[in-house]
Length: 429
Image (tube, rainbow, N blue to C red; front, side):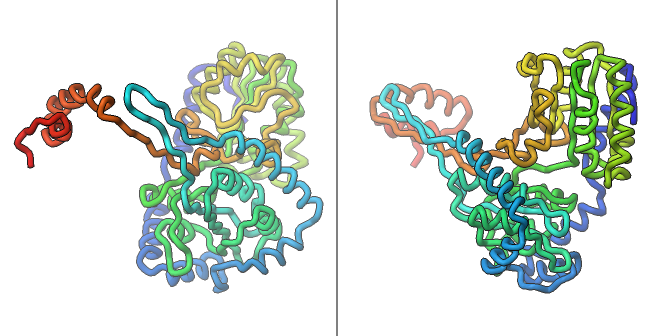
């Protein structure tokens, strides 16, 4: 794992991170484009073809309610209780994000904003042996809180294998429209609609690179949440931090895949030495140590900083998905944090709490996009409509200004809507 001690080394590492987040291979884009075009043209037949090719089964696309219940009953009761606890906390957090319509009167006018949920959302949930019931909770609950009437879920089932924990999460939330379809074909089916899968208004949820590229390509046909990249964590720590905690948290992201990024920023040479030792020791006990080791080697780093303020500046430049602050006074850093998907303060707030049960959403901006985007939330499932109502008095108060500006822009017909109401003509019929 790289230990960075000067500005030149830091810049080289930051450049590598940016390249990691930039683009995909032309071959993947060509493949996804072909799949989407085929699904758009042939609907269910194309979806069935790609499901047979990639997931190796020809089962009906819809997972029935009885199947959902049957598989959910196989889930371990301890896991069910954990899902119930997590769901209640996620509901509690997201209920505070609800927006309401509003209006006010001013000078003979009523102005406002109408809040409405989207009608139909599509949720993609990774499937197979590596299934994620937490993804169901984090993507479905905000939509439900927003008031979305219809929620369709696509989950791949390689070899026809259905994960009972995903089904348990769906049953817990009352989701009945579920399809055993994955990959770019699932995104295409939800975006364009097929004979059996109706078109949605927005697609949310993580997936592999093919899913991510497909979501990017259908944006505009439907809305999407974000283009999720590899997972990442950045930790700012001083001598007061527990080295074993910090190392464990870095490895919690490194085990995802070899493209994950785990970064430590610290002003302390002695602490950096302790972390290097802890990482080596903890790696030995991990089942996924080979993946974690490659991740740390490619996109991991320990960065020596000139102080905590310098560490925060670097963190803001990186704009990490997960930012942990383990310092003597972590709250003091909060006003200085500009760019992060989620901030975890103190030694008892490890990132996995946010992944599962804390309450805030775990769907977070990656690859530096926290500079301009936010965690998934209730606000992602609503639409805002502006409301305007003017009396004659209110109209007359603005008429001259609007007419003047329309004329200045050369839009005669725009100005004429004002003139005809003021009792004048402008030669436009």
